[in-house]
Image (cartoon, rainbow, N blue to C red; front, side, top):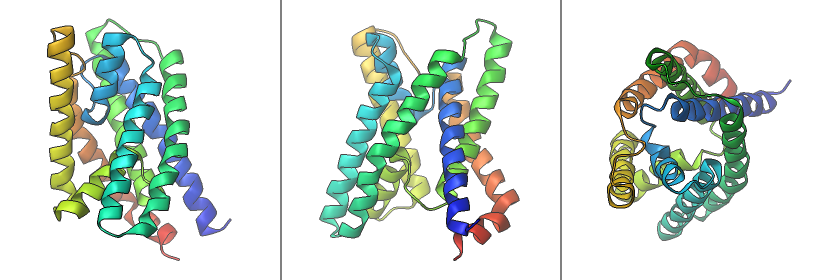
Length: 215
């Protein structure tokens, strides 16, 4: 099996695990990750499909990336931006499937266990897919594009973008539902925990990753 084939397999598994992690995050009902907080809150308030709303938000992320890359005259990156659309469609269908078949629990202890699995799956899935350096998830793609545009580190840009999403979510929640929706202790734990899982994954599998991506 060629390196390229193995990269695609690892990438596909990573996206699958990431979708599972994000869905588990919503099922814990303790507050979701900032990147999906906007579509999740709108879904909870309006009753519209979570996966479909996530696709709409991801499509907006792609449009922003294209505008940034056109402005920076990095036309070669536009094809990668466009490829995020079919990827997002498949990814959000996975969200819908997982949301349909994964049950929720009212037991607080079980919900924290689900949150722990959500953080592990989200971190591992994100690390696997990003490490293969193929088409990024729109949530990661827009952070990278914004970092390029404003000449800031990806880490700082990610933190600021998370805060931006949370502010939008809080505004939607307070002005429409008159209560906070989708933001809670689980959101804080996810912000801290996912980054630690990604770092641990890279530390353990650094050699394997370099072996796959180095042609």
